[in-house]
Length: 123
Image (cartoon, rainbow, N blue to C red; front, side):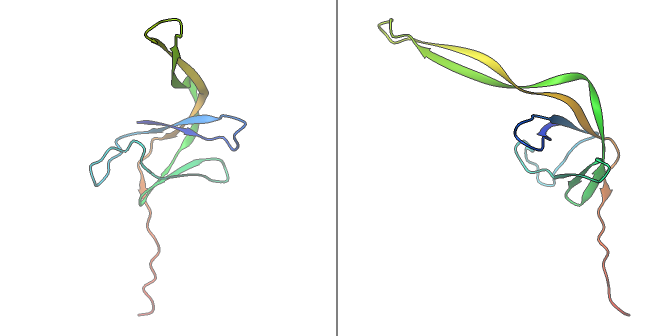
C-alpha cells in the first residue's frame, strides 16, 4: 500500500514522499481507510521515520526512488461559446502537476507493540 504525504516544512517548497508499508493495513471495524486517520508520523534525532498506528510502532528508513513520481490534479474547464444560439459549452480536461516525489518512507519490519510500564505499587 502506498500513501502520498507532504513532508515539507513550509508552504514554499513541495517536498513529498510516499509511505510504503509491507503487508496489509486492517481495521477491527471493516471500513474503507481512504480519508481516515491512520496514525502518527514522527522523526527521531537521526531523521529516521517512526510510524505509530494504534498500539503499534514501526521504524522505517528514507529511500530514494529509482524513478520519480508525479502528483497530479485533474482540472476540468468549461467554456461557453456565446456565438452559438443554443449556448453550447465546450469542456476540456487537463492535468496540473502539484509535486514530484523523489523519496519514500519504507516500513518493512513487523510492527512492535507499545507496552506501557505499569506500576503495581508495593506488595
